[in-house]
Image 1 (tube, chains in turn green, purple):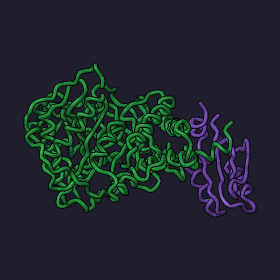
Image 2: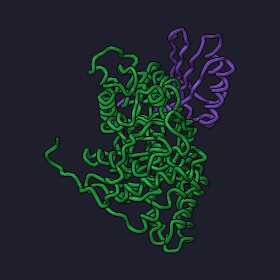
Image 3: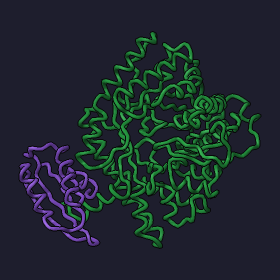
Image 4: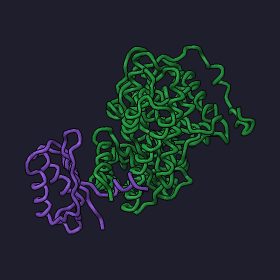
Length: 454
Length: 90
């Protein structure tokens, strides 16, 4: 029988430590909507999304009330649109029409983001995929809820450097297209290496072609819970530290598993995965950086940060894997700058640079995330940042991503405001030496060798 | 049988249990177990109840008990037992 101590521990996590389920994401395959006529394609996409996800928001709310656990976001991911529109979209404007359709469908069912305005071009680009990529700046500027991602490399294929170079331009153009709102469009655009098919988190979510017709994924959260648990073991050795993280991750993930199974049963949609990521928000006490500081760092960014993060990430997985029957997605600690109060503070006090953040991404998911950089950063430099991050993912067989925001009209020392869960960020300086001749070479970086690991 | 857990946390005062119990009786909810303790000077109570024959929906229960708590000056939560079972039992 459950006892009073356990009940109050759970409720303490929810009320004081910001324990929540970050997202229930319904993956919807649009492959059966494909058509060569744009009008018919749009109608079929709208109908399929609004039919499959009709009860998603209500079901999420019912579960929230019944179990007393906040479920922050209800979202949708769809099959990469570059594929779905390949027969119907003869121009970038046609693809933008699909983005508008996704936006309308998302609004109709009441979700705040829909992911999958995506292209998977890790080895090469079809003309349709290139059209979708070139339509991203307009698509993100004229929609509210659509999120876009492009996979430009993988461990098995190497890096598509033509796509990397192109994405440098696209990130810059997206920033320009949304410059009135501190280049907010770039917050909805992720460039991946080794993108997972079943990621429930935005902006990088899409419904891979290896997935079932519809599926429910859940992303858990809980940095505040881990931090609170660690505050009880200050000064203890690493064994105690690791055990504490692991046990806490287990408890947090069990809640995610419960919510995922309930949502799957009630919606009659198969359960996909639980994503074990520790996802921060700009709220006080909901920060991954604060966990690292609780471990004993004066500020995140100090020497020792990468080791602390590696430990955290690994223990979260060890605890979480046992708590859920299927784990997937990104599953690691997120270190977005603008969405994490502790990260914002570290950047403001000059303790954290892009170079240190890059080192941190070697040991956790998911990459250089929500980092504001000067608006005059050249597109070729952004392509260089993407190439560096993708190389880390390719060589280390992990997912990495870049979501940087060149804030048009602002420079180092100023702050970009994105609002809501996207937060705000002081603009970080970028190394000003050029990589133009390198990224302009064109072609591909071959897949790495899978032996002689060093 | 689906069980529901009601928790009351706040400053101790006269009649907390009485008020919660009479609300539950009016709603045709059977109390299976009550435990209480004082943690850090705060009154902590947990009730395990059977709400299967309740005349109220879960949504009504949650919001009625929340407002009852606000009247008394305590926090009352009402949750399905599984969130605790899953978190604390393998």
